Image (cartoon, rainbow, N blue to C red; front, side, top):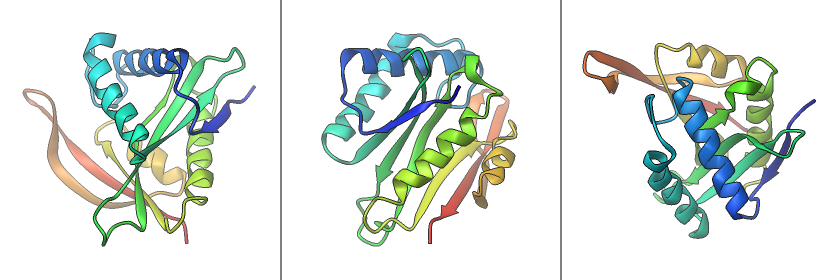
Length: 174
């Protein structure tokens, strides 16, 4: 089976709760999505609400993947630049696939769907994202066409004594 992707889904309580559950499960499985385990839904909720507010303001768009049971199984948030000299590329944040779906190719499917979506955005010529070093994520993104264009050593402090590189990746669309 594959995921069904929707850009800009209606934000219902079920979607909100599904994204919150996904984010919590991914974080607690060790996923590099802004939190470190153990983390609760309540700790993640304010960050999700910031994303939802940005969506309502038109600054952010959501791509969500549902599995065959209709559950939220994957997400990626696009955030648009407000600086007039950087409006030709978009950020991709909070790229997640539920741990129960790891190894099925859904991460690659999510990035393909994100690329397709970004190609429909007026004036967007590239997708930029960052990832936490030390997990092999840059190799995964590289296999999906992204190029490493920068690295800030030790910029991410997972915990005292565990600093990771912030790896900057870019996917040109033109």
